[in-house]
Length: 405
Image (cartoon, rainbow, N blue to C red):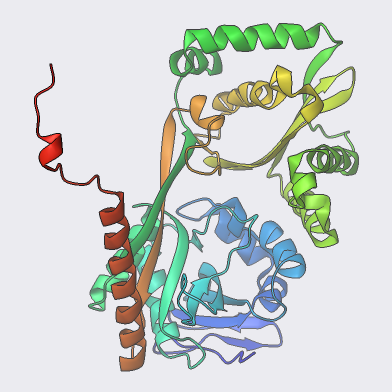
C-alpha cells in the first residue's frame, strides 16, 4: 500500500518516530492500524468532544474490526489536525466497485457490524475537517474517482459540514441513498413512553406473555455489574445467537473465529472505556434474551440482541426491549439509535422516533475523476428513473374507464 502523506495545503501532517506535529490545519492518510498506535489518548479525547457521538468510530470498536475483519493493509486513516490538535478521523479504503459498476473509488471503510459511518469530528470544525479531507484526497495519487461516504446522519452537523465544504469548492454533494431506522428519544418516563407509543391491545398481550413466562420459573432482568464476569456473559450471548437462525444460516458471530474474536474484543474494549451496557433476561438463572448497548453521552447505540428461540412464544426479545426503555431515565443519555434495518417489525412497533441516514458522493479534483463521477451518477439516476417507471401503475386504458354500479 502507498502510505505517503496527502496534504491539505499548506503543510502535511508528519509522522516522525510516532510524534505527530503540524502548524496549520492539514490531513494525512496513514495505515489505520498504525494510527491506532500513534493516536492513542488523542482519539479517546476526540470522541468526547465530537459534534456527533458514534460508538462505531471510537478506537475500542475500530481496532478489533481492523484486526479481525478488514482486508489486510487496505484501510487508511485520514487524520485532520489544526494547530497540533486532532480534529477528525475518517477510515478509508479503495472500494473496487460502485454498486454494479466496476469503478474504483474512495469510500469510508465499514464492515457488516459497523452500523454508523459518521466520522468523529470536533464540534465546530465540521466544514474545516471536510475541506482538509477533500484537499488531501485531491492531491493523493492513490485516491481514484470520487469520495463515497455511507451512514451519515441526514442533515446532522457532519453531513452539513461536507455539503458546505463541497459547495465552497464548487462541487456537488449528492445524496444517492436514504434510509430510516427507529430512534428512542423522549422526555417521558419509560412507562409513560410505553403507554403513549404502544397500543393498549399490544400492551395487554405483552403483559400476558410476561406473566406466562414467569409461571415457568423465576424471571429476572439484570445488567452487567462490576463484579460480573464479562467473558461468561459473552459466552452466553454467543451461544444463544448461534443456537438460532443466525447459527443455522452461518451468520452468527460465533460462526467464524474472526467474528467471535471481534465480538469479545469489542465488548472488552467498550467495558474498559465505560461505554458498555449489557442487559439480560434470565429464567431461573438461564439467559433467555441478551442485549448489548453502547452508551456514548449524549447518545447511545443498540448493538446486538439475541434470544433463545425455544422460548420464542413468550417474545423474550420484546420483553428485554421493554426493559431497555429504562435508558430514558439515564441522566446523560438523550437518545438511543436502534441501529436496526429500516421497517424492522419489532423495534418499529415499540419506538416511535426515526433517524434518517444517507449515502453521499462527492467528486475529487481532476478531469478523469470528474468524468467517472459523472458517468456513475448518470447511470444511477437512469437506473432510479427506470425503477420508478416500472413501479408506477399503468395508465388506465379504455376498458378501465367505466362506471361501476
